Image 1 (cartoon, one colour):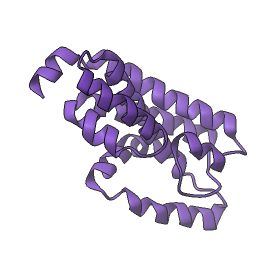
Image 2 (cartoon, one colour; image 1 turned 90 degrees about the vertical axis):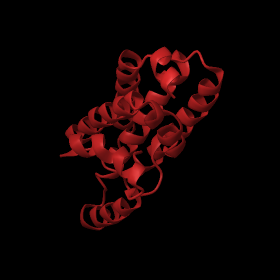
Image 3 (cartoon, rainbow, N blue to C red; image 1 turned 60 degrees about the vertical axis):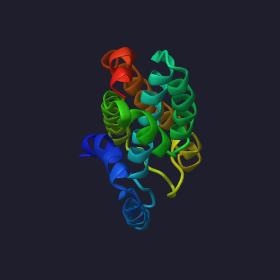
Length: 165
């Protein structure tokens, strides 16, 4: 289940319904003292950043680079809308790369039992909610970012895609 949710989370961002997950976080915090949902969201967010970063490095277009690089950084801090709407969905394949990376990071988080001690911040600063398992959190981010970067690098070609856009 977590693998699927890590992969599909970004789609709920596109639909604008991702704020509802705070209720899941709060319910899990009340019941278990941890939320196992927040790491999945974090994996998905960082993955969209990895995909946008691949676009930033691979693109030859200065306008695309100037949009993709800062939006990749923003996604790695938990704000994915610039990366999703400005870059990844625009070319679609990077968005798919991000979904795959998010799924892989979420799977790792689930297998290791990674849970957050609060809700709110994801991405780089999300480590503050995972100070009891910082190494696992960093590994989850590396998997999410790395897989989405690699998948996007392989499946996205700037020439063909930028000509269409």
